[in-house]
Length: 196
Image (cartoon, rainbow, N blue to C red; front, side, top):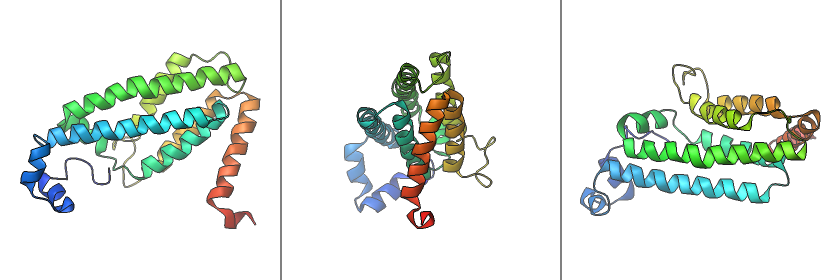
């Protein structure tokens, strides 16, 4: 997550774990196998986190607010080259990410949109299928170094700006007010000194 996939060798991993490379190869056929297994594990943890947020959320806006915190934390830990490395050098892991995106992210976004419409927080005329696909695409676009060069943009900041823009395109006035209250509450939690 921190360095990307390509720049880390099996030697680096063995050294970090203080085991021999031979020991690594007793558990993994090769680097591709290791990357695939780590990707599966990481995405299962992500799915679990999304599910916990969904269950604990009071409403669709609360879910979005909690997801934004989770998303920001995750984006701060990710090297922007990660998805590029997976796509170019690790096709099995990339396929797992694509499947996760289609099943978990799409389903989660669509369920939230449908719930928000039913609760009156999102505009009723929204095409939830189209917007779910758009949201998946915007998650990936921040990793594109041509669109958002790493030297100029912080991954987490770009993702949060896009997320905020996405939310404001969804909400009714009732939803906007509630979303703003959640954002203000989070700002106080993050910066309690500035709120005196």
